[in-house]
Amino acid sequence: MDQVPETPIRHDLQPLANNDKPRSCFRDPVPELDVAAERLSAAADALLAGDESGAATLLRQAHVPALYDFVQSVAGQGWREHVHFREATGIPGIIEKPARVPLRMPQGGAALAVYERDGYRCRYCGIRIVIPGAFSVLRRRLPNVLTWGTRDTEMNTAMYALKGVLDHVLPHARGGTSDAGNLVTSCQTCNYGKGDFHLAEVGLDDPRTRPPQRDGWDGLRRLLSAARPASRGPAHPRRGASLVQNGPAKPPSNPAADWFAALNAEDSARLRELLADLAELGVTWSATETLVVTLRHGGATLDLLGVNRDLTVEVPWMVHDHKAELRLFAAALAAGIPGTEVYETRRWWRVRMSGRRLALADLLGARPSVHEAFCAMRHALGA
Ligand SMILES: [Zn+2]
Image 1: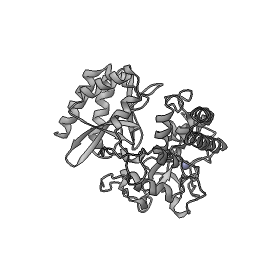
Image 2 (image 1 turned 30 degrees about the vertical axis):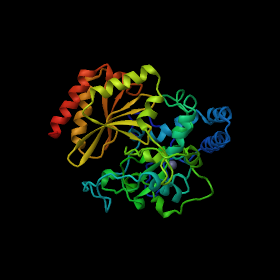
Image 3 (image 1 turned 180 degrees about the horizontal axis):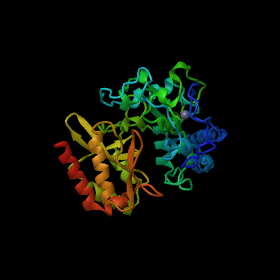
Image 4 (image 1 turned 90 degrees about the vertical axis):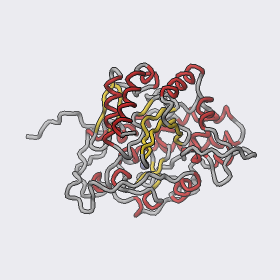
């Protein structure tokens, strides 16, 4: 008699049980992805032609609610609980404890070169993606339309599904470098679905064995040149900020001013409150979309927490080094904020609340605990 699974299985996903036949992606793209890409492209053209209200209408139309469920079905928190990836043990060539390499993601023109090489399409599933810098331009110009939130009703799903990312084919956490040869353009669904797994572990074939598809799609890169002001301002050294720019002629960029300008007075005051609490830590911006609070220790930079534009918070923001200490930090924070837990899979974990994402207000409501967690973290590192 068949065993009854303890958790419900999603029947709308491709079966993963048979890994003998490698796949190019976890789930075949749906036509709605193309619809959203077309509308985003039309919105970009409208914006470039000076038609802001037309662009706003098209961006609203690009929001296809079903895309939220599509991305979640592969990249959501329930994904790995519903599948049985092949155990790493016994797969030839997989080193379980690889030497750590510094994470040096290509920035600016170097990042754009990878997107360009890949035809601005996900190398796994093949869908057209939009480069992060183009989304930044759209959000800056139309902040009330290209929304971001915790539910499908709050976020513009076109951005959620189509925002491009550079994926480490051999995951960084498993020893992969950030050389262009190990990076491919990916959509959010494929990137988050793959996570820190080897291709063999999740039954994917190597996307680099398929030639990239170049057909004139530009990832809305044309928005970058339009956003470039005529005069050149002071260089800004913030990590990641240059991804918004295009080529060597960098426009004046001040992620801090940009960040605060997009907030209302109350949110702005809240954010300044948090930063005042964490004055001794570093702050950086991830392509200006997320404010990242960092702790430098030895040669490593630990991205402790990230505050997204919608004021949701990711703890930790990224896990590259000092995983054990960051795990302690997350646990200390979760213990101090009611209703939170540390969500953990085999290789990945994050502080979360039941039913919604952690918010800036949650951190501010538990300031002593936050402070204690930071102190404990510094202590653990001897910093
Ligand atoms: Zn994809």
